[in-house]
Image (cartoon, rainbow, N blue to C red; front, top):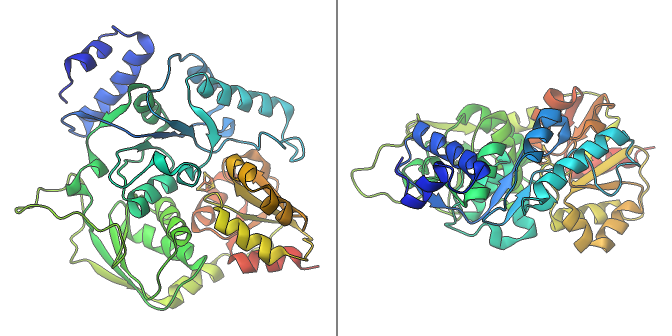
Length: 398
Ligand code: F3S
């Protein structure tokens, strides 16, 4: 990869050891993926925040860094709600370690907002056509597929390196040639709500790392596309999808088409997913939930409104946890109070997968195809899929 003279100076350590290491990471990635240059990024979103996942070694590594990020940068969900971890029985020692991780990132100028939906907090973090270095797979899918920005699925260290340098190697989803659809998926029947998570659960396993383009009988909302993209990134490695007739559209390439870098399937590959297959996802996983958890990815304001309305005048009889960002809680105190008047808990800056507090439950009902994939792997609990209405119904059943 070609580096400019000023980038070479950083690589040679002229601006200190931390920036040298950051440039080494970017240069190595660029060489591996055959990038020809670094390109500026608009923002970064950095994974590797939950102390449950990174442990002492991660905390030590982050604490040893210094400097200031060059672009707006925010964090992935942490292992606890910073305001109400005591109420959720998080051990004091874990809380102290988690706080140290967040403070270490904050000392680098990173905003201590811990969410997988950064686009809900600040729209200017990702606008159509912007290049980004985001880590969390559902946020990556949303940025690429719904916003029309461009990002690869960064690891925590490469996103942090991009934040410190303000650039990322120009490869993968930054390039038009890798943003072409590679598999056409026709879906029979109309879908709504959690059906999109169930669809993603199936489609991700089929598409792998390809770029699906869906032909749908219903028009998904952005929250439903969020759920679809999140599930495909979990059951497969899909980072970009299209919906026929909906923006953003695939790029048009000059002829002859440059060859994509990845092993992409021929668009002649066309499959159909029947509505019965989507129904089967709800039926295939059965257990008796002792926790109901919504907000994977973190709830938007519209989803919180829906939950408040569904819970109005009701009292929950089971643990019912709703995840969103701390900024969303600060912006919508009335909504949160309305939900919590039912006895449900609004929990922020963390989630059922990256926190240790879900591990004590044996079966979790979720409304998310991504959580359906990850809860058994990451929490050791069984998981069952339900619509938001199913979740509320179960939560208030005596
Ligand atoms: Fe977000 Fe946690 Fe789900 S990070 S996408 S709520 S697994």
